[in-house]
Length: 399
Image (tube, rainbow, N blue to C red; front, side):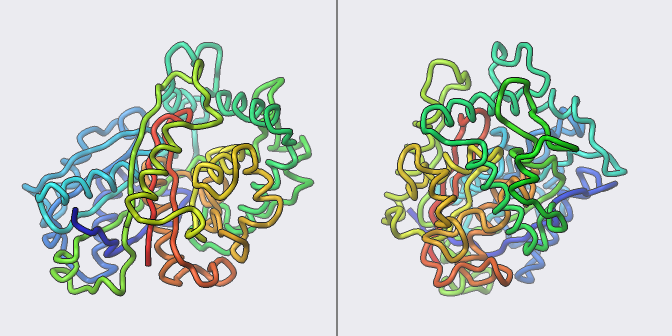
C-alpha cells in the first residue's frame, strides 16, 4: 500500500459559527486548508465530507454536491460520510481508501457541524433528539437527553467496576479546561474550572440524570466548527510542492464497529475500539510504548479514562488513575488531549475526528501552542468514536 501523509490541516475556532450557512462552511473549509500550502482545489484528486446533523439540524443533505461547487472540485470522486461522532475520522479513511484504490494521489477530508442558530443560541432538546437518532431505538425510550443518559450509565458502571470516584473523573475535565486556556482554537479558551467547581452541584453544574453520577462538567460542548485535512502519497506531495520529511505520516489506521445496542455487550472493554487500535499499531509497526502524544474521544469524562485504556497507555480499569498520576499532562508519559479534548476544546461532531488527527500532527511537527507542546514528540495515537462506543476510527501518526 502507498504511504499516506498529511499535507495540510486547518480548523476554525470551535464554538459558534453564527450566521454561516452549510454551503459557506464547506467553501471556507476548502479555501482555508488549500491556503495553508498555497494550492488550488484543482490540485486535489478526491474528497470526502462528514457531518452528523446536517439533515436533522441544518436541513441539508448531499454534502458531496456542496463540496463539488467549490471551483476545481466538480466531477471528482467525492462522497458524504456519516458515522455519528466518528464521521470526521471516517472521512479521512474514506479519502485514504480512494487513494489506495488508485483514484488519485491527493485528497481532502472535511468535517463540520452547525448546532447553533445564527445568533449562536442552541435548542438543547432539539439537539438531544437529533443526537438520539444515533442510538438503538429501544435504548432511547424514557431518555430526554439520550447520549448523556447512556454515558451516565457507562460512567456508573465504570466507577463500580474499577473503584473510581466522581472526583477522579471530574479531575480529567479540570485538566482539559486548563489545556484549552492555552489553545486559541478551543471553545472554552476563556473559561476556567477548578475541581471544587466541577464537583459542586450549583449553577450550571447539575446531575444530568437523577440517580446517575454524570454532571454538566463531565460533558463535552455543543459546538459549531469545521476542520479540513489534505492527505497525499509521496507522489502527491511532490505534486503539491511538498516533501515527506516536512510532513506527518498517517502510518497506521483502522476502523471497527460494534453492535449499536449497548445492552448485551461489554461496553467498558470496547472490543471493536481495541481491535481497530491494535490493527492501526500493527500497520504502523509501533506499540503503545512508542507513543507520547494522543487525542482520545472524551465526549464525557469517563471516555477520557476508557480512551486512555484503548490506546494502550493504561491497563483495563486504570485509565482514570493514569490522569490522576499526571501521566496525561504535556510533560507526562503521554500528552493526552493537550488540545483540551472534546470536554473543553469543543465537539463539532463531524469535525471532531479530523481535528483530533490534525492536533496530533501539530504536536509531532512542534507546532502546538506554548505550554501544550509535548517535549520530543515521537509518535501519536488518535481514537475517535461514534455512538455508545460503537463505531471506532483509530490512527497512528509518525513525524
